[in-house]
Length: 239
Image (cartoon, rainbow, N blue to C red; front, top):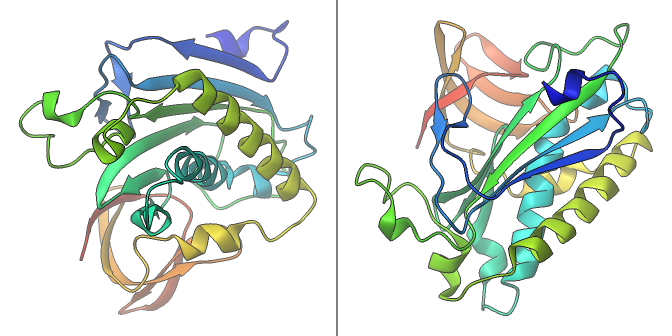
């Protein structure tokens, strides 16, 4: 694996023009077609002086960088800013459909943060639907996803998107390291707030009313056992 090579200089960008076996969370697969944007960024937490507690917020920062970049690309469209949302912990939605997915590999990302362990490297994998129309997607996916092309009716410069995204991501990571309250903006776009959420944690399903995002990046659910924080899990449903 590239990230395990001892002489690798981070940050490192790996761009894929196409994918045949895109990965999602768990056993999920990421469907992509010509016109989408798929890439990975390898970052060294030590370079940004990130603690393990801060590193666990990387999926949230990546989602926020993706949302801000997408908003900038379609900013000329009326009311477009209100059409974007973030689904904890790693999806970006547009008009109620999935626009982008994020997969991050880093030790202990799905457990409660520990300030005593080392942070190390993280591989940030991103898939964004840009110029690939979901009218061409498999039948069972057509109503679940959306691309910027579907939304705006025109094509976009994918490399320009990537450049803007990387600037947003670096700025967010540096702001996180400086202790700035960057998750406030994420919380304002949270798709799950005030909804009934069913979360799969390991083999256990937990349901509750979503209270939004905690300052530490955890999802807050009001359950029958009280308010609980979750640093990882798969959102099975929300309504």
